[in-house]
Length: 425
Image 1 (cartoon, rainbow, N blue to C red):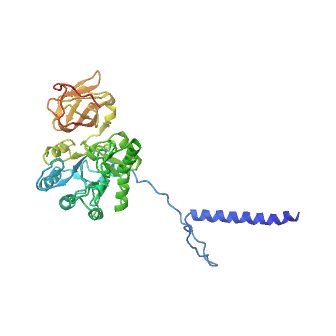
Image 2: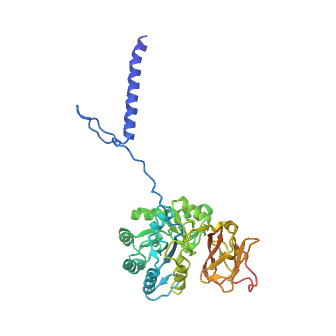
Image 3: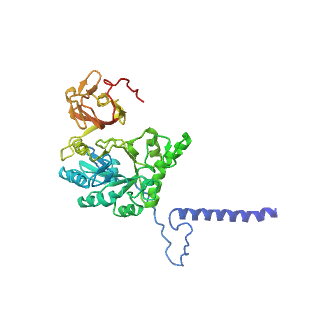
């Protein structure tokens, strides 16, 4: 009986202590005093301390963005006075002329993060825009291109592969330095990722280690190329990296999945095409500018609307819904392909309104079969490099369009003259 009488007060004290402890924990959780911080007891007669309310973080407000705006993205590499490798080099004079041409044409150069905000529905952009990007990390981007961009007041993005920065495996004397990147960062230049070692990410070969990779080794290597590159840039420069440009424009679904998994919001390729509000974010095409192909620059401008206003609303149909041939992102060996698309996803089409545009050719005499809803055009002039296609039609009184891009393999032969056609891979 005595044991029970002694135990009762002890249990009561423990219960009161637990209540007190819980109450204090709740107060800390409400933000009155951070955990581990000392707090003085209130003096007699002083008013009780007020508890500050915590405001939950809010998502950026959505705005009424112009969904008819169009964006073209240009990609540059190295700037030299004597062009020896035209696939990656251009003279400073030609570059400055092109930047002036954008101004003359009334095309606004916007920053990458403004574009990303527009795609998220958080910010508006002008009706016709361009984004300027520089790949790899050549020091001429710091020495030559940056002063020209300052002259025009244009923002731009650097896509950097980390082992190409001075001091890395492939960072020779013509490479940009981490100090120069930090200086550009401080000036507001956007810096994004371009892999670690800049090689075809589809192939299980490590160029730095010079070895073929087993399937498990390839997966780890791919994670490093796509993910560790992002981490290195973020840690070395103290920035947020949300865009990835695949080396050479070579990618597949697995690479896109890995990029999404490590936190990229956008993946850029080299298959140039105008970007709309509805363009998918995992394969955004850029126009790469080469020293001996200035027409690519002009073609890109001609592929976007020429009006100064937003124009009538356009419903964009994704390339995956039109069974396009050649398919979006495909590389064909046939320089004279039959270009076609099934427009059933457009709805009830006015047959007379169907048009097809091909980059470098303009409007082509395509035929439309209303029974199969298929538009097609047999190319008669050999295509080279990358080709963008725009198919437009009117459905229910509204303009509908679809876009896709494919590449033509250099040295490819059309089936009509090939002795033994190579089957599609």
